[in-house]
Length: 130
Image (cartoon, rainbow, N blue to C red; front, side):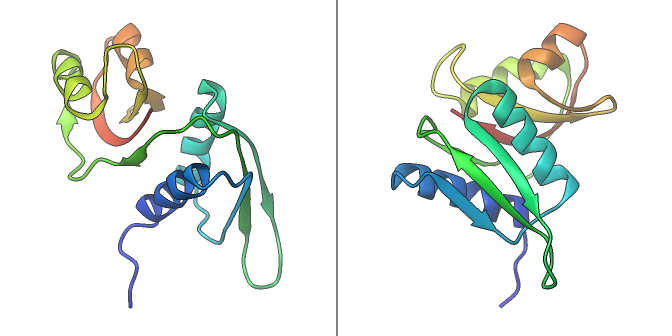
């Protein structure tokens, strides 16, 4: 069986482990985008720290969970949005105003939708978390 979206798999594991009350998540899925999204989650206070463990079978990530995530997931298809459409997708994917974050890939890197509004730039939607 093939795995189509490793980011979706990691975010699904984060949601499930957090809901089960587990404190750590060990995953073999490791990429620059996954690490950058985990950095954003850490900066926003949704997860604790994470570390990369190198071994002979491939690098792994160990994520420390805080137990504050209700839901996280990937936005498919990756909608190309401008600044004027951010609020529309915020209503679509987040439960309430000022609750949660959406991750947007812009020409200035990955950032939350609040940062994209402040910088007045659009991009592609990748993920959400609340």
